[in-house]
Length: 326
Image (cartoon, rainbow, N blue to C red):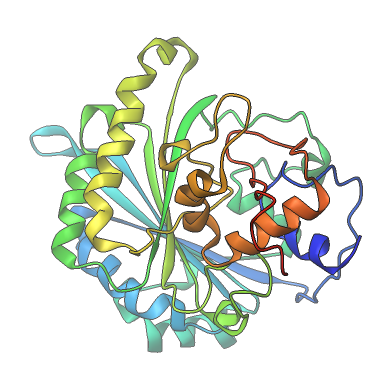
């Protein structure tokens, strides 16, 4: 297919360059047993300070870590009845053992989490995929079932994304909690996914995906709703947009970056037929691909000059007068 096509399809967004019928993957070794943990802290348990600390250490943990936090509204019982709060679920997958490796590292690097052995579970790497994906763990065959629909996930949802390059101020999290406690957010989640590790060692131009070096973590904002609430979809989507606007001062800038796999047409789109100019598409394109967007447009023009493969955020072709040098 040529080096440029091969470069473009490894992170350049689906549906722009053709139909891929097979992949050949180079696997990497994993240990026989990996360790996972989940530690929940509500606001009343000093969650805000622990979250703020996580920002400064998660991207510096050993490369064997895959670390994150998920925020969600929760009802808690108190002396005066039920009230709403926010739970921060700290979770990680670690490619090693509990006692000899994980606990000593966490006690040194992140004592604020107060991780205990009973918070940790050892399992195979494949079983960890079920655990992290909230899938039933009675059989691994569910990973081969393309028709399976997770009953824990809403059939309709809105997702948006951000990248963080500097720790968010502790006071800014208070604004996040306020929005998660609004009525519209009863099924909302906000996930922080730590970067660092090997991500810092891969050049931003190695593939079209550029968000690596210097990124502390990625954020995904997600809000789902039931089928019977579809007529009120704007009510939910507007909540997501208001939260996204609030987060503007605390995330990446010039451009404000976004993750292509959480497709978000709020940041720009082609017309109904998937047609657009390079200049129009660049508004959203550089948010997904940064400097790689220009090269993607050149590859697109070279292999699909008639723009046959197109959709609302497909890579555009260049005009004949544009510089085609790759």
